[in-house]
Image (cartoon, rainbow, N blue to C red; front, side, top):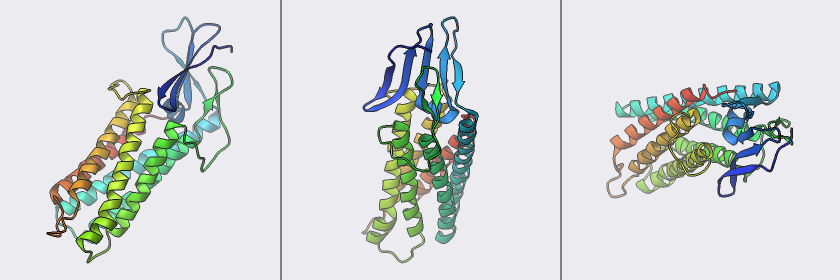
Length: 278
């Protein structure tokens, strides 16, 4: 299948979409999120109004589908447990009980983030001919900093690991305000920042440039809902700073409600992600 030079779109050093004009007429379009989540690219013949998806091989589609199930369920369960932990805190449950629920939820968040990273690592790439996809062998890890999907999912995974430090340290008792801010609040803030940067990259990827509203794009809704959750987590983290003079949080109510609503957003995003599959 002949084609002209591909037209690249994206932002900065990242390419999120490639478009080829086929010699026989029509277009072939590869998009990074479409390839990663659905294992497909679009080919539109000259006489067709809508593109026809050209999919990767069955083995690749199968493993992408399994990873999507793991990621979707993990974010749904992790978000639900974080919401439960915040609800328990609002009802004045013991700190250990809330911390235990948060910690288990954090494990699910980490599993979902790693499954998302594996999707990026093992996503099919554009083949040597326009309108085709090429799959490689399975990898548990690859370093690909020039791919926006890899950077975004890696930062998400790193954020969950940093949150793990925060969640483990939450079991410590008798901390001074300075110790609480260093061991619990600081990792929380770093994790939230990593989530926000990851979400911004995901918006750039799905919009192929500057973020905008794409109400008919399921991928955009998933990314937008998750980014709202990240923003709410950041608000909760800011409110969870321990004031040295009083030994109390800036605002316990905002910290708990921000965590609860942010967690609900990630659960909703996980439900939506179940429909973005090969």
